[in-house]
Each structure stands twice: as C-alpha cells, then as structure tokens.
Image 1 (cartoon, rainbow, N blue to C red):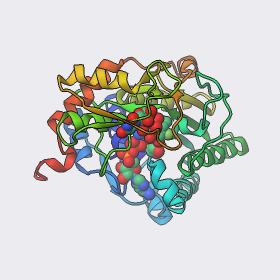
Image 2: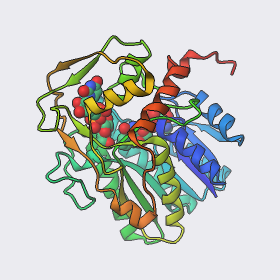
Image 3: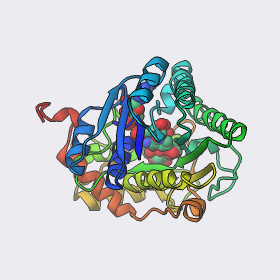
Image 4: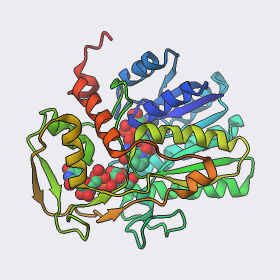
Length: 341
Ligand code: NAD
Ligand code: UFG
C-alpha cells in the first residue's frame, strides 16, 4: 500500500513512517515542517534502508493536495499534521481551528475527489476533558476543556458524519494518551521547539544538562504521592497502532479507540524511572498546579486490543531508556547535528 502520512516529519509521524515501511508499505510524507525537521525523514530512511517520498506543503492548500493525489497512487491516509499546544491554542484559537479543522476539511475534500476514502486520524485523550470516571473508556463523555481539544473533537465529529453519510469512507480514530520514548536506534525522537510543555521531554533536557531542574506542577493532587498521574505509552507502540488501524480498515468498519497502556504513573514515578535509566539526578521543585491540569488520566485500553489486536508492549523503564538514548545522542535535538548528514 502507498500511505500518505501528513505530519510525517514530526515526533509521532516519523515513528509511524518507520513502522509502515517495516511492514512493507510505501510512504509519502506531506509536511510543512512548521514544528519539525527534514532530518527526521533522512533518519527514517537510514534506519529502514527504504526511501520516503516527501512533499513539502500545507494541508490547507487544496490545489497542492489535488496535485499530490494525482501524482501518487495513495491508498490510505494517516493524518497527523496539526498544532498541539494547549497553551498556544488558548492564546491563538483561530490558528488552531484553521490548521486542525480547516486543514482537515481541505484534506478530506481532496481525498474524496481522488477517491481515497480510508483515513486514520490522530486524536487525543484530551477530547474526554476532566475524567468523570477512570479508566477512560471510549464511551466516556466527550467534553474537552481547551480549544486544542475542541479542534480534535470537531474533526472526530466531521469524520463520523462523513462515514455515516457514505459507508465507502473508512475512518479510524486513535485517541493517544501520553506518547513518550523514542525509537531504540536513538536516531529519531521528540524535539520540541523552545521550552517543552510536556513532562518527559522536560525531564530529558534536565538529565542532559539543558535545564537546571524540573518544576513539578502540584504536590497536592488526590493521587498516591500528590503528583499528577498519566498513562505514558511508548511512541513505537503508538506507531504500531497505526499499522494495525490501517490494516483493520481494509475489511473493518469505522472505529474510535484509545491508545494507552491502561496504567497510570505519577510525575515522581517518571522522575525515578528516568533517573534510573539515565544514571542522572533530576533535581525538582514543587510549584502550584498547572491551570487546566487533571489529577489523573489513564485509559481503558481494552477496545484497541479487542478490535485491532493492538496492545502496548513497552513499559515505563523502556520508555525512559529509549527517550534517554535519543536525548543523549542528540542533546540539542535535530538542530545539533551538521546539516551535511
Ligand atoms: P509534532 O509537532 O512533532 O508533529 C506535527 C507535524 O505536523 C509536524 O511535522 C508539523 O510540521 C506538521 N504540520 C503542522 N501543521 C501542518 C500543516 N498545516 N500542514 C502540513 N504539516 C503540518 O507533533 P506530534 O507529537 O508528532 O503530534 C502528531 C499528532 O498527534 C498531532 O495531530 C497531535 O495533535 C496528535 N497528538 C499528539 C500527542 C502528543 O502528546 N504528542 C497526544 C495526542 C495527540
Ligand atoms: N508536569 C510537570 N512539570 C512539567 C510538565 C508536566 O509537573 O514541566 C506534569 C503535569 O502537571 C501532569 C504530568 O506532568 O501532571 C503530565 O503532563 P504533560 O504535559 O506531559 O501531559 P498532559 O497529560 O498534561 O498532556 C498531554 C498533551 C496533550 C494531550 C494529553 C492527552 O500535552 O496535548 O497529553 O493525550 F491532550
């Protein structure tokens, strides 16, 4: 199969491309590189020994999309391109609705015109909002509490309407919990712009000496040690979930599933696991709770197992070891290496 991966140069996208190639697919990446580096694609080619076609462009550019579908014999789309910062989405909601919702609309219209009607979409646990019950199953109410989360929910609804109106459309919605880690080669990984918002990349930058200490947002949550609990899931497991989803859509109906492990770990659990993986001390300071943070969030991961036969295999220790291998080899991310690579 020839799979179009939008956002394929990004953190999750680069791992998805690698898993698709390893499973024998051909891959064309569409990316505008607004939050990513072209080096990630070169590294995917280096690891896999296989070529990746790259189209530089914006998902909002319909004319370019129409040309792309004429040029390549695409059988399915994995749609990861989008903006993902909750903080930025509060400050600049229109750019989030434009990129994530309008961009997806342009993509879907171009797909329909080209007769490509199979899509896997990157959604997020953020669509659930504040958990009313745990673990979070797919039937939990959808009530996001920030503009970013609403863009994800709106796209989910657009996709649901589309597959309802026309059963030719096969839609797989993957709600990721907290993707962390990196490919075991240490060649591709997460490279956030500026100060990381998320826990694991921040901890990794402390370990590698780019930052003095970690600020832990709150030690008075109703959790075992007072710090926030999340369902961390290895990015390679997440990537494998996309291959399962694409394969399932060959014969199965549209679906939405969580991609998580079903286990919750606290911030202090992560700090300890990273210290032991890296052999580095992670100094930390407790600060106030972060606005909009929920205390605990973890998945009921049974639907993905039942429907797709997918489950996460890598534990927190593997997540930290792999994240550390990437960070240690690339202390400044992709920008740290000579471009002559
Ligand atoms: P990322 O920023 O590393 O990757 C996003 C990619 O999309 C980048 O390569 C970027 O250049 C590209 N892109 C953005 N806007 C584009 C546009 N208009 N046209 C073309 N390309 C564009 O982020 P990621 O962590 O790899 O996330 C991938 C997807 O997964 C996103 O849709 C995100 O919302 C979703 N997601 C991520 C997480 C997470 O914690 N990382 C959790 C849940 C869902
Ligand atoms: N945390 C800190 N210090 C930091 C960063 C995070 O203490 O510097 C804490 C948070 O307070 C939280 C936990 O670490 O308790 C995890 O925080 P992250 O920011 O890593 O993850 P979130 O669950 O808050 O959010 C992430 C993505 C969202 C996505 C959500 C669910 O940022 O976009 O996972 O997939 F919606």
